[in-house]
Image (cartoon, rainbow, N blue to C red; front, side, top):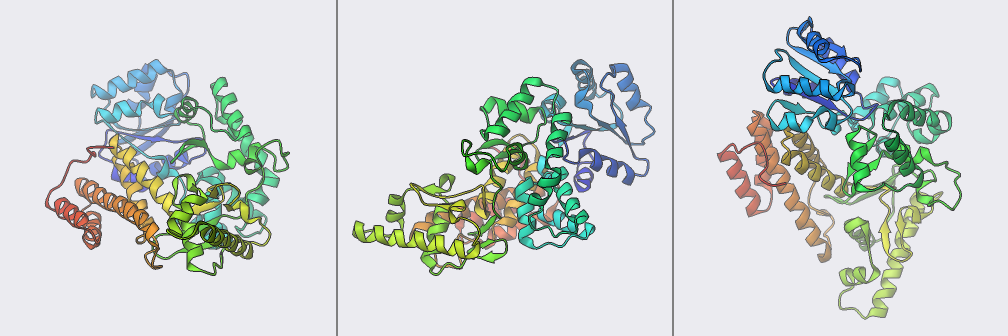
Length: 485
């Protein structure tokens, strides 16, 4: 967060926006403390008027920047006057505006006029390295899969992540199954916090908690309103949804079968699947012992389908083309059975169907399986969204994360079967797009070292298109905003 503040220091206005508990205020106070008088922090009273607000900015002892916290909660007309003053050049100091709602902060208006830079939610969200640092600071033992599990449980929400780690420290436990232990003691307190702090709109309150209780995300207009109001919502490939940890807390783990079991029972340990480069499939650090390469590739094929599901006929066409249907069907049944047995061997106490469903359609359950390819696509799509709306720092962040996730072509170390080649080509094309925009955006903002590194990676891709893009990016510094979404 501090790096983002430093990188955007030339902007007249910086907008720090995110849901409750995402660490906005804590980060802002750190920034002020590190500024040695260059910045001042002001928590804005909800009933302030325009004159008092302008006076608070003008008389601030800060030399350069004034941080206005909770500024989206003031009267809309008062905030509109402030925006008009910013656009008219009447505010002498630089501002950092903190709030929960991008709509109320009028982030798009200030960005479109060239006055503001907005921080993406992902800059505030915890990543694996930060969870590891936090656990180490608290003296909590952990393994890599424990960190993956915690991030899956919390969606990187700073408040929940820190709470789970602190609970593990206080109970002198490792990070393994931190959510399950914390839920029994303190889970209800998080829901109470959200109920107390998160809502001014009664209709939004009811709709949001109804979506938690039922497990249904709600209509698109409702979820968009939740996001605009700064509620604990995350954007995914399939749309907006509440933070996973709240959905799990809202319905008791002992709920009856009248409610969908997948949204009410405690989730098993996350299965981590890597399809980029060398295939890897583990549950809580235990490798899933697939006995045949085809078993791995059938599993990977299903995981790469839209919504991670496909039909048995599609699998027969992909892996047993031209084979007698009865013989091929028996081969598929045997393969699916071996996959389930391998999963059961890695997690004996968990029904394999919790990860890999074979009744009817064949499906990988994305609620319990973390797939690197899906994370990659999510980051690319988020990068495109920020790119298209001119949120340069957010786009750079998403593209760089996507670059790190893509280790190599799909199953490059496993001699993939022909049916996976199309997927490999699609992901490689996305990777070329990512490297292109990393090169262009970083060159345009003066980070030539990162731009050259990405350009070198482009040149190393086994693609004429990649090499063409690399040479084009090196030869000229293109505009910051993408031409298309």
